[in-house]
Amino acid sequence: MSIHELNAPYEQDPTYQMAVKQLRDVAELIGLSAEVVEVLRHPEKLIQVRVVVKLDDGRLATFIGWRSQHNSALGPYKGGIRYHSNSTAGETVALSMWMTWKNSLAGLPYGGGKGAVRVDPKKLSIRELEELSRKYFAAIAKEVGPDLDIPAPDIYTNPQVMAWFLDEYSKISGYNAWGVVTAKPPILGGLKAREISTGYGVALVAREASKRALGGFDERTVAVQGFGNVGSYAALYSAQWGARVVAVSDSQGGIYDPKGLDIVKAIEVKSKTGSVINYEGAKRISNEDLLELGVDILIPAAVENVIREDNATRVKAKIISEGANGPTTPEADKILYDKGVIVIPDVLANAGGVAMSWIEWSHNRMGCILTDEEALSRLDKLMTQNFHRVYDEWQRKYLDKPMRTAAYAIAVDRVVQAMKLRGWI
Image 1 (cartoon, one colour):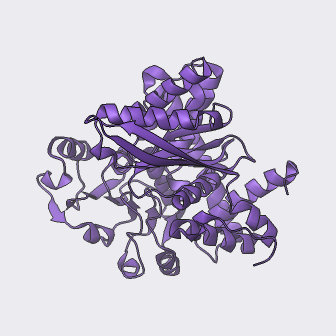
Image 2 (tube, rainbow, N blue to C red):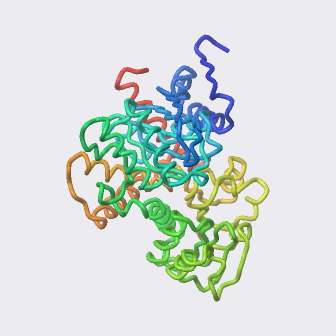
Image 3 (tube, helix red, strand yellow):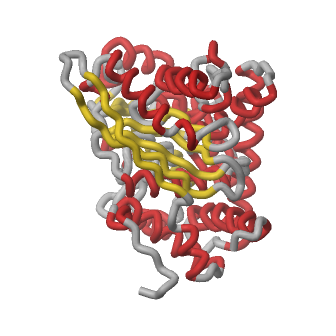
């Protein structure tokens, strides 16, 4: 180890190590020095807090939380806060690094941040969850703010949690700080369109890729793995824009109809019965079967690492739009590239959520009112432009590698240029 290298406790985390490997691979490609990589691989600040909650039965429970502020060269830190029993400091740092690249690639005036509390929220009552949320946000209140660090929901957090965050911060700061969090309830300055924005963006980039590579989107067949918030809206907008969604799935299994599914009906069935497998008139299939269907477009919108070295050779889709974070392993990415499959990386495909958060935040800061139609129109324009910018750069400079390479190269280089201009490196 040279004197320029720094060791930190979070470095042993496998998620963090994956993020650093991606950074180093891109750094070698665009010619960054080892010293610059050393700067970029560590967060500017990692905050750890202890949160003590009095449970309904009178016992005290202690939880550990974090907020990682990775890079602010492009603007305030931006990224979600998750509640999960497996959260770690290393994972939180890695996620904040990925948010830096995602925000940079989207052209947003944000750096990257991420927060987490190690807790199983399903084991807490509503009152306990509110106390946890308020005390966590109070503990990090000096480190966040509308012009400093703007959190949002992530796994097992939602607009109600954001409302508690907003209220707690407003009490501490002494004013209604509408812009301190995004994805708030609409009555508190949020946008209803935020709920649909990630799935909308995933479908949008699939549409644009089809125009570039397949000659159009009409009647292109689509399969969606994962029918939660992201997958259901990705399926809905794909169908509205003329594609034929032939398969969808959730954790209990999937359904398939080569003639096309009624997505509105599928959403209703999922809402009423808990699973799309109760949809009548379609063939039941497994999640693994769905990945290997002979469709034009595949949207993995469930969990990470579903397309792997052992099944990538059987994937028949021509385009993959990554709705989930990390659904394709690096080994599978290479196999798919060699087969001629276009993989639209998660850092580009599922950026609709943070892009809509920027639209919400900017209007909170200006005190403006924005309709959902206006918000979606701006999101459509922003993501369409970003997709074609990345696609063109890939075609021009990195065609011998997956599109993910071009996306990361653009994102990292933009951050580095901002750091140079500010005199940081």
